[in-house]
Image (cartoon, rainbow, N blue to C red; front, side, top):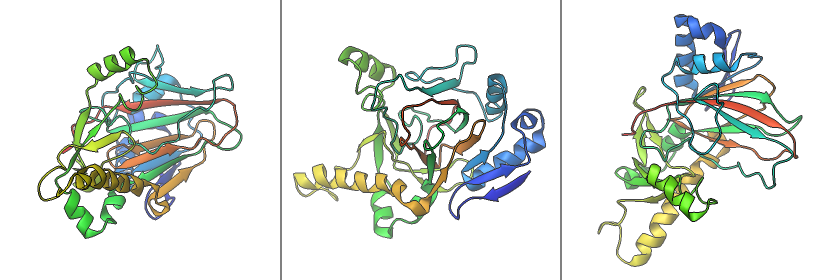
Amino acid sequence: MRVEQLTCSIGAELVGVSLVDAIHDDGVFAGIREALLRHRVLFLRDQDITAGEHVAFARRFGELEDHPVAGSDPEHPGLVRIYKSPEQPTPRYENSWHTDATWREAPPLASILRCRECPPVGGDTMWANMVLAYENLPQHVKAEIAELRARHSIEASFGAAMPIEKRLALKAQFPDAEHPVVRTHPETGEKVLFVNGFTTHFTNFHIPERVRFGQDFSLGASDLLRYLITQAYIPEHQVRWRWTTNSVAIWDNRSTQHYAVMDYPPCHRRMDRATVIGDRPF
C-alpha cells in the first residue's frame, strides 16, 4: 500500500490496496486506520466492491448506524443511499459544510462513501481539517471558546421542511444534542473545532464576564458562532476530490467537515455511505 499525500493540511490517496483485502487482513486494515488518523480523509480508486463488502469493511471500524431521514439499503442496514436523479425537483440542496450527525448525543466516528455513478463533470466533495482550523485561531479566540458548549439540531436542518407534526416528532426522537465547542479527539488527543452547519447556538455564553448589555449576548454570541463556523471555508484547511465510478472516501468524522458541491446539471449521482457509530464528545 502506498500513501500519496494530496495537500499539506489534509487528505491522502491510497494506491495498491483493496478494501476487500482489508476486511480479512488485520495488517492491511491497521495500515488504513493509521493513515486515516494522520491524514483525516483517505481516497481510493477502482474499488469494485459489493454492498455487502462495503458494509463488512466499514464494520471493521465499529457498528454502523442508519439515518432517520435518508433512505438505507433494505438488504444492508447501515448502508445509506444518497441518490440524485434528473427527475428530482430542483433546487436539490446538499451544499453545506457539516460534520455528519452532530445532532446525535454520540456523533459518528467515521464514514465510508463509495461512488456508484457520478456526473461526467462536477459533483466533487470537499473536506476541511478542523484540528488545523482550531490551531490557526487567534489565541484570544481560543481562550474565549475554551469552555463554551453548543446545541446541534436535526429539527432545524433535516426537519425544517417537514410538516410541523412530523418535525416535532423528529425532535422528540432526537432532542438537540449539546457538545463542547472544542472537543478532544479520543485517539490522538488533538483539539478540534467542533461547530458546523447543525450548530444553532451556544448554551453557556450568557455569563457576566461576557454580557454587559443585551447586544453582547444576542449579537456577540451569534457573531462568534458564525466566525467559528466559517473556519471550514478557508482553502488552506481543505482538500477537494473528483469522483469516478467505484472511488471511495473514508473520513474521520471527529476531526473534519465536508461539503458536497452542487454544481452539476440534472443527472444521476448515486453514492452509498456506511457510517460508524462514535462516542460522546468531550
